[in-house]
Length: 161
Image (cartoon, rainbow, N blue to C red):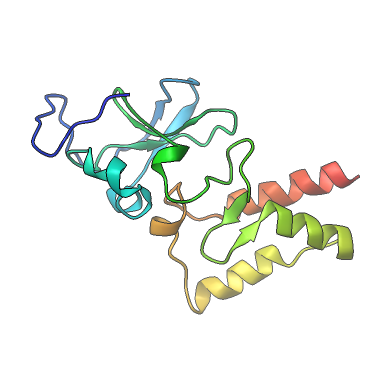
């Protein structure tokens, strides 16, 4: 793992705009999406954030079996560098799928077991309007959770059959 301090120069153009398109994760090889610097600013633990010259140009690896959370060039950030548990990673507990409104796979599973249905999507959509969401800073992906919540519901429903 390579970190740059604020005083060091990175000749690879560290401070760039948000990455466009997708880039392969250096560990698992799956395509990863760029993430805003404000996502990392909010979610990185202090010592990990302080070791970086800047927070631009990172990608988020959502592959559940991969230990990488964020990467840029040869720089790799892992769960230990993040202030929240990355719920989409294998072994995450709690397995949060909506960080703004605290929906976890465990909560969804309990609701499905008790009621044969879940209000997770409806609840999130309602709350997105009032009080609003903060996906760019609360969700490690830096994006909306609705796709991940929908996928989690389907997976849990299939496992309960």
